[in-house]
Length: 230
Image (cartoon, rainbow, N blue to C red):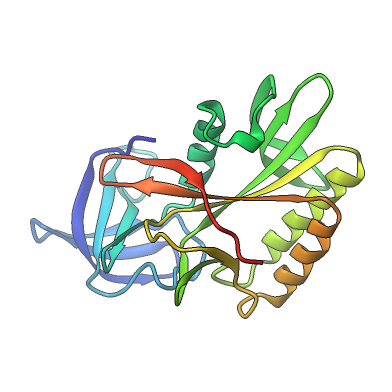
């Protein structure tokens, strides 16, 4: 996925979860939308390098969107909406080998009680429900999910389990959106309930995939599967 033209700045502060004050290289101070509801631990800090996109639309209250940050030598895509886009791209270009062999791919399809599945794959014999999660948290020498308690994430796991019970295939896809080349694990110390639910649903044949993305200032793409430490 190609980024819009990115503009560099330094973070002043993030607040109210979805807002960030940033000083651009031209010394202009802006407020950017932060498309990330998580804690963003380990991927944002005061005075870190950031890159924003600019969208001059009358419908937008905030013209800038935070896209990337840099911590140490690592670039991090903090826009969680990107994970779904590059997952679709990676399925279509056959990078995600485990999700091949389907004739149709649809996004944001209604399923379960009141949810929408991120990706629905179908052929004559099978439906495959794929839930996508963006990974940006680093804990020591691991990348991890979630970075905050996520009752919504737990609900999604249970709904995937229900799809398996109905005779369908269900896949939990974690997309690592930072350039650290590290193994992945669940952050059970952050959300014990999520971990317990994960163990339960994977015993009941919900599949798990973890894929690493490649990031630079021009584009982001899923490149290969990553090591998952159970």
